[in-house]
Image 1 (cartoon, rainbow, N blue to C red):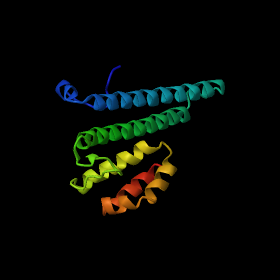
Image 2 (image 1 turned 180 degrees about the vertical axis):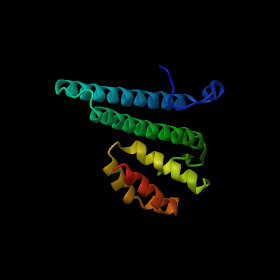
Image 3 (image 1 turned 135 degrees about the horizontal axis):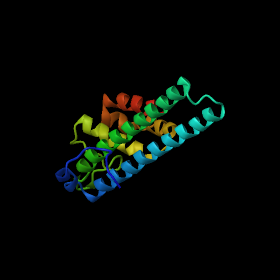
Image 4 (image 1 turned 60 degrees about the horizontal axis):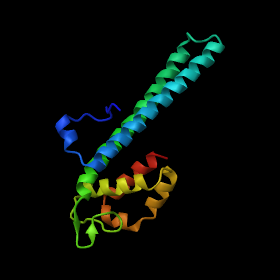
Length: 163
Protein backbone atom coordinates (compact mmCIF):
# COMPACT_ATOMS: atom_id res chain seq x y z
CA UNK A 1 0.00 0.00 0.00
CA UNK A 2 1.36 3.39 -1.01
CA UNK A 3 0.63 5.91 1.71
CA UNK A 4 0.07 9.39 0.35
CA UNK A 5 -2.85 10.60 2.45
CA UNK A 6 -0.50 12.78 4.53
CA UNK A 7 3.05 13.93 3.96
CA UNK A 8 5.40 12.75 6.68
CA UNK A 9 9.11 12.12 6.55
CA UNK A 10 10.41 8.64 7.30
CA UNK A 11 11.51 9.86 10.74
CA UNK A 12 8.02 11.15 11.46
CA UNK A 13 6.52 7.82 10.34
CA UNK A 14 8.91 5.91 12.57
CA UNK A 15 7.79 8.01 15.56
CA UNK A 16 4.13 7.05 15.10
CA UNK A 17 2.67 4.51 17.50
CA UNK A 18 1.03 1.32 16.30
CA UNK A 19 -2.40 2.88 16.82
CA UNK A 20 -1.44 5.96 14.83
CA UNK A 21 -0.04 3.79 12.00
CA UNK A 22 -3.33 1.89 11.92
CA UNK A 23 -5.15 5.24 11.66
CA UNK A 24 -2.94 6.24 8.73
CA UNK A 25 -3.55 2.93 6.94
CA UNK A 26 -7.31 3.17 7.49
CA UNK A 27 -7.38 6.74 6.18
CA UNK A 28 -5.34 5.68 3.14
CA UNK A 29 -7.81 2.86 2.46
CA UNK A 30 -10.69 5.38 2.65
CA UNK A 31 -8.88 7.67 0.22
CA UNK A 32 -8.24 4.82 -2.22
CA UNK A 33 -11.93 3.81 -2.06
CA UNK A 34 -13.06 7.39 -2.69
CA UNK A 35 -10.82 7.63 -5.74
CA UNK A 36 -11.94 4.23 -7.05
CA UNK A 37 -15.60 5.16 -6.61
CA UNK A 38 -15.03 8.45 -8.43
CA UNK A 39 -13.36 6.67 -11.34
CA UNK A 40 -16.25 4.20 -11.49
CA UNK A 41 -18.81 7.03 -11.58
CA UNK A 42 -16.86 8.80 -14.32
CA UNK A 43 -16.69 5.55 -16.32
CA UNK A 44 -20.42 5.03 -15.99
CA UNK A 45 -21.04 8.60 -17.07
CA UNK A 46 -18.75 8.18 -20.08
CA UNK A 47 -20.50 4.98 -21.15
CA UNK A 48 -23.87 6.71 -20.80
CA UNK A 49 -22.80 9.68 -22.92
CA UNK A 50 -21.17 7.34 -25.43
CA UNK A 51 -24.42 5.41 -25.84
CA UNK A 52 -26.22 8.73 -26.40
CA UNK A 53 -23.52 9.90 -28.85
CA UNK A 54 -22.61 12.88 -26.65
CA UNK A 55 -19.22 11.70 -25.37
CA UNK A 56 -17.42 14.77 -26.71
CA UNK A 57 -19.76 17.25 -25.08
CA UNK A 58 -18.73 19.83 -22.52
CA UNK A 59 -21.43 18.45 -20.24
CA UNK A 60 -19.38 15.27 -19.83
CA UNK A 61 -16.23 17.23 -18.96
CA UNK A 62 -18.17 19.39 -16.50
CA UNK A 63 -19.77 16.38 -14.83
CA UNK A 64 -16.41 14.62 -14.57
CA UNK A 65 -14.83 17.74 -13.08
CA UNK A 66 -17.66 17.91 -10.55
CA UNK A 67 -17.07 14.26 -9.60
CA UNK A 68 -13.35 15.01 -9.16
CA UNK A 69 -14.09 18.07 -7.00
CA UNK A 70 -16.42 16.06 -4.78
CA UNK A 71 -13.82 13.31 -4.41
CA UNK A 72 -11.11 15.82 -3.51
CA UNK A 73 -13.38 17.39 -0.88
CA UNK A 74 -14.08 13.97 0.65
CA UNK A 75 -10.35 13.17 0.65
CA UNK A 76 -9.60 16.47 2.36
CA UNK A 77 -12.15 15.60 5.05
CA UNK A 78 -10.46 12.22 5.58
CA UNK A 79 -7.04 13.91 5.70
CA UNK A 80 -8.26 16.48 8.21
CA UNK A 81 -9.83 13.77 10.39
CA UNK A 82 -6.59 11.80 10.28
CA UNK A 83 -4.56 14.78 11.45
CA UNK A 84 -6.97 15.36 14.34
CA UNK A 85 -6.92 11.67 15.26
CA UNK A 86 -3.12 11.55 15.30
CA UNK A 87 -3.00 14.69 17.44
CA UNK A 88 -5.66 13.33 19.79
CA UNK A 89 -3.92 9.97 20.12
CA UNK A 90 -0.84 11.76 21.46
CA UNK A 91 -2.99 13.66 23.99
CA UNK A 92 -5.03 10.62 25.03
CA UNK A 93 -2.05 8.57 26.20
CA UNK A 94 -2.02 10.44 29.51
CA UNK A 95 -4.27 9.81 32.47
CA UNK A 96 -5.01 10.42 36.14
CA UNK A 97 -6.02 8.36 39.20
CA UNK A 98 -9.30 7.47 37.48
CA UNK A 99 -7.50 5.94 34.51
CA UNK A 100 -6.65 7.23 31.06
CA UNK A 101 -8.33 10.41 29.94
CA UNK A 102 -11.29 9.61 27.79
CA UNK A 103 -14.32 11.66 26.95
CA UNK A 104 -17.02 11.41 28.43
CA UNK A 105 -15.97 8.84 31.09
CA UNK A 106 -12.90 10.70 32.37
CA UNK A 107 -12.55 14.12 30.69
CA UNK A 108 -9.24 15.91 30.97
CA UNK A 109 -9.79 19.41 32.35
CA UNK A 110 -6.07 20.21 32.04
CA UNK A 111 -6.43 20.52 28.26
CA UNK A 112 -6.87 23.82 26.51
CA UNK A 113 -10.28 24.48 25.04
CA UNK A 114 -8.99 23.84 21.51
CA UNK A 115 -7.60 20.46 22.65
CA UNK A 116 -10.92 19.66 24.35
CA UNK A 117 -12.61 20.50 21.06
CA UNK A 118 -10.45 17.86 19.33
CA UNK A 119 -11.23 15.28 22.00
CA UNK A 120 -15.00 15.76 21.83
CA UNK A 121 -14.96 16.00 18.03
CA UNK A 122 -13.06 12.73 17.76
CA UNK A 123 -15.47 11.07 20.19
CA UNK A 124 -18.53 12.01 18.15
CA UNK A 125 -16.92 11.31 14.79
CA UNK A 126 -16.05 7.78 15.92
CA UNK A 127 -19.35 7.18 17.74
CA UNK A 128 -21.45 6.74 14.60
CA UNK A 129 -21.23 7.22 10.87
CA UNK A 130 -24.74 8.70 10.68
CA UNK A 131 -24.30 12.50 10.72
CA UNK A 132 -27.87 13.18 11.85
CA UNK A 133 -27.61 10.78 14.80
CA UNK A 134 -24.23 12.29 15.67
CA UNK A 135 -25.68 15.81 15.72
CA UNK A 136 -28.69 14.66 17.76
CA UNK A 137 -26.47 12.98 20.36
CA UNK A 138 -24.18 15.99 20.57
CA UNK A 139 -27.07 18.42 21.02
CA UNK A 140 -28.25 16.40 24.05
CA UNK A 141 -24.77 16.22 25.64
CA UNK A 142 -24.85 18.50 28.68
CA UNK A 143 -21.25 17.66 29.65
CA UNK A 144 -20.01 18.98 26.31
CA UNK A 145 -21.67 22.36 26.90
CA UNK A 146 -19.73 22.83 30.12
CA UNK A 147 -16.52 21.09 28.96
CA UNK A 148 -16.15 23.02 25.69
CA UNK A 149 -17.39 26.43 26.76
CA UNK A 150 -17.47 28.77 23.77
CA UNK A 151 -16.25 25.98 21.47
CA UNK A 152 -19.55 24.10 21.93
CA UNK A 153 -21.31 26.12 19.24
CA UNK A 154 -18.34 25.78 16.87
CA UNK A 155 -18.44 22.00 17.12
CA UNK A 156 -22.21 22.02 16.77
CA UNK A 157 -21.90 23.94 13.49
CA UNK A 158 -19.15 21.59 12.28
CA UNK A 159 -21.25 18.51 13.00
CA UNK A 160 -24.28 20.16 11.40
CA UNK A 161 -22.26 20.80 8.25
CA UNK A 162 -21.89 17.03 7.78
CA UNK A 163 -25.69 16.60 7.64
